[in-house]
Image (cartoon, rainbow, N blue to C red; front, side, top):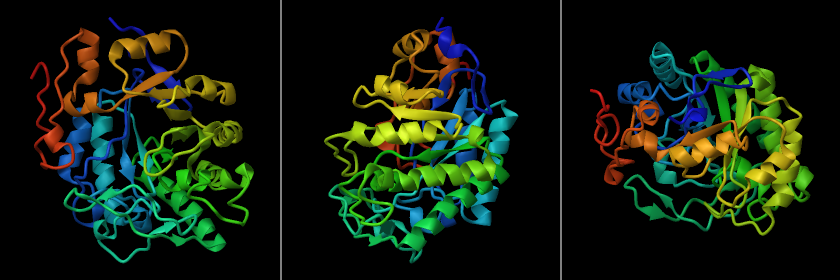
Length: 351
């Protein structure tokens, strides 16, 4: 038995029944108006035995949408839809936090259902293509650079979204600072060429992310907030010759805020680096298998481990880990399409 993975863990105010976290995964199943559907309710309910679920990336505002059929938390209808999700997860004894994901320049305009702008720190188009409504990658939009007053407004949008998440029953929120999305765009000098107090020096480039975390902490409590980073990950045109020079100061500044956790996508063996700059709790993510995750926890290198695709095809992943059962494989053709197929039709082992 993998004992460390199955032990309860506390991350700030978040109580996890085990150290197995369901990682955030885009699934493109939101309904009209980017409202969570009943199918989404069932998807999350099935996986409620995870110590904690981190939802797919959720738009804090209409301008934050970049991908087709991703859900939001900026309308009353969306908030009501998420309430159904949290009620279902809590009824099964689960814990769930919402990942807030503002895509910034990582956006195909055809993916939007309104005339909201595509914004970013600077008017620099991402060199990486983004899937359109049909799933075919195309060139992303050229963003409008945010004015200083706009930046302040976006920071407040995150705080409002965090409050809405809590009103929808979420146990906390996670700020997506990875994968080339808006906070990452501010952090990286490739995408941030501003000359004001949000650009140039590393102290200025981390300012936006720290202000968002501070404002959300004031809104719902620092001990219910985590943030996700991936230093050195070039995804969505985020190549960086020296990520440590940015993420070290970011981690040290965030460490002072009393947050619940940092969620590390350890694509460049950065776990040791994070531990040198962060004294709080760590959720590790790096395509771990249960046995390698168990070893990581036993060595005290992380406090919990998140799993992605294992949870897609194994809604009862925690039970399978507990029993040492065989894991089902992912239907890769229906990760982003298929409605119920490849989404809520994976069988439970003991069904």
